[in-house]
Length: 416
Image (cartoon, rainbow, N blue to C red; front, side, top):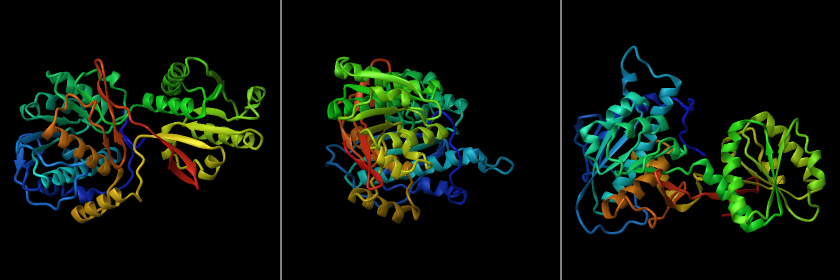
């Protein structure tokens, strides 16, 4: 999952020169996107910008102005002499800038359809104290839609200070479980890990229908965050007719499983681990096993980001991976977006820019034409993922849409 987790991200590039002109970029709004600020209570008038074509847009029925507050960890304090960016805070600023650009390009697209927005951007600094302060800010509180803060701890601090539990608050980039925040107004855009487990279980049950599933563990307790919902899902879907066998694998030894393997049907292996040494050894053992038995592997969604995993090996063991943000850069809509983004910003869009664009189009149109408090019948097909929301008591709305990919011709291909 290419998403913002609880931990702070590591540096993946240096765009500090680009970031120095963020004030100019933040002010570059189309005529119908109202003034933008990067700090609370400081608004600047905007200037016209090119427009990209909105997906699924319809002609608006009214010309009402929708107020949006965007809370991102730019960390502008670090622009001052004597307080430089660290590798972590610079990466947070990069993510913020990329997301903002994509989001604004989406609003520009919608303004071309006749919608009207007042967009205010606030620096959450990636700090809980600042997030709490923004929860008390009148300009934020009076917004029709609040997007951010980004990190789960910051969202929790914000919602603790924000009294309106029915007002939608968007968690734009984190797949953290909403149970850690517990706000009925929360809208979680990135599906949490448990929905990846459920998606894998549904695919296995519906498409493969095995009598037995093997879960290979490395022994780390965090793997239970995937194993527990997977077991619950497969028991529910199969009415407990599918047996689940657990094995903590040591040094790639799978010999104890051989008496239980089928020689005529698929042998399904679930591997929730991400540890490099464990995966290298265990996957090689499965590769050896696949020369005799039919092997199908379902891996952790973060496998898509692990460069040490080799596509040829993954293909030989019939590897499937769930994903909520896999981008098809050859798709026509993606190519159009990249062209428009390059023309507007003279830069290459990252995955965060694409997420910002998708979420901007989806949320911007619903805000202007519908009811953000009822998302159950408002599905959307985006560039990085689709949106299908379910309401969970006390946890708000959660995007539950997961795609299943399989290695074919040495790359991931969507199978569902």
